[in-house]
Image (cartoon, rainbow, N blue to C red; front, side):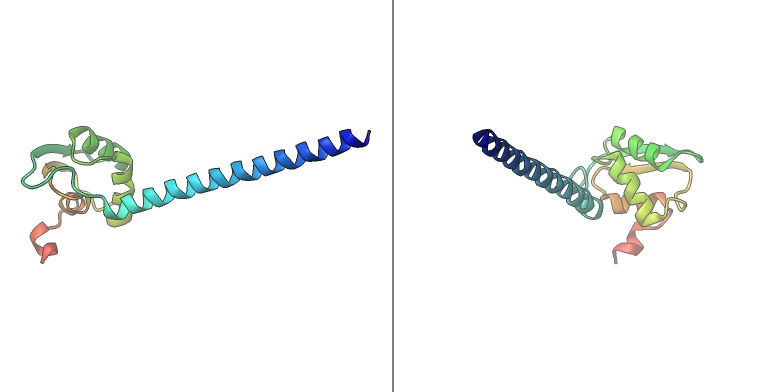
Length: 127
């Protein structure tokens, strides 16, 4: 009787420790993923080095930011359409993007792409 209680307590303690380790592992993985996403949002580099390739893109009125990000990812202008959509919402508010046809370059950073899509002049902002 007594030995079965001891074994049951040991098993209970081991399972509690395993559960805590699992929770710690999940929290660390989630924190790492959140940090990586945040880092990418603010430091995403250009896809290619200078001079890059010029690619034409048409943005239609009513197109969502996620659709625009997916289009740019599909054309090879950004690494992740979702990250670009988040950057658009944070940096341009999403409502400054003007419809039209754009010639974008793969050597531009997402910030530069957003400036062009918002109708800002790249030369003015780089000085």
